[in-house]
Amino acid sequence: MMDSAAPDASARDRPGRWVAGGLDEGVSRQVWPLAADPGALPRTPEYLGQFERDWVVSSPMHLGMDAGEFFPMGLNAEMPGDQAADDALSLCFDGAVLEEGLSLMGQARLSLRLASDKALGFVVARLCDVAPDGSSVRIAHGMLNLCHRDSMEEPARLVPGQAYDVAFDLDLMAYRLAPGHRLRLALSNAYWPFVWPSPDAGRLTVQAGSLDLPVHQGGAGWQAPEAEHAAPWKHRVIRPGKTRRFVERDLIAGTQALVVQDDLGDVENLTHGLCTGETMTERWEIGADPLSARATHTWEQRLSRGDWQVRTEAWAEMTGTATHLRLKARLVAYEGGREVFRRDWDEEVERRFV
Image (cartoon, rainbow, N blue to C red; front, side, top):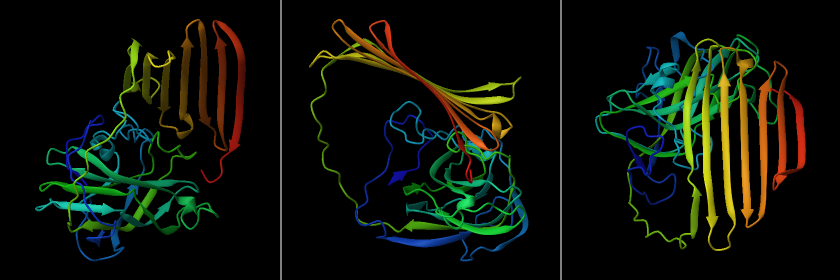
């Protein structure tokens, strides 16, 4: 169970403790309604209480730049960073300052009554730990394609303007908010580049809602055994790697892009002499128009041993129109300095409830 800590997308470790027992042991469900007043998240036993007014969710397309990787695997800022900037672009409901802290273990479930002005759309919920200095750490998140509100097997388009009751689970979590912190629920209908945008920039009106939280009451701790690992691999660094991750903003074009430059360098395995290396770039660009979304990737892989050398170069680009998603790609293989294989793809797939 992780403890509150300052936002750090490249944290080598996180403070916390191990908790023994099953997922439901020591857990009680608490329903926190979303209040009529802006920003409030009171702790009262109401359920889906009607707001005095509707709250609008109409997110800019670039919201989500601090989301981190969908499947983080390294220390190169792949975890979510400070959520404050994305929170400022979201509809947020904040709980009261926690005098004694709050432990959560399991899955939160969000229920909303909402309407959309478009036939296609989605909603994203982020549960965040807000510190006294305003920094925000993502605890868990979840998202729902609103066409899947009743069934993923039989999706249905939305009727614009019609209100729907929807519910969905957020990711599993084990997290303790420190005293003096707040729990925040942030809602958006954009989350780039986690979610490919709908073809039209939609507008959701949230009429009511509640958050069902798994509150952990405490229990037996658990001491992890000493870690075991294999002997480190014997290798020689031929060329060190370097990774960069940054957001690029074009004031003329009106676009923003998340750029990842991941150079893993080149190394030799001293056990069998195989030399390996790879270099990858990602560019996730979007403007105010959801149809401007563009994802471009390049990936070079290198293998060699003695006089033998091979290399592959891959390039892929995804874009979308109002009716289709388009993927273009190219793969080229080299042996020595000679090209031995090349293939190009240009495929379209129809948007189906996306």
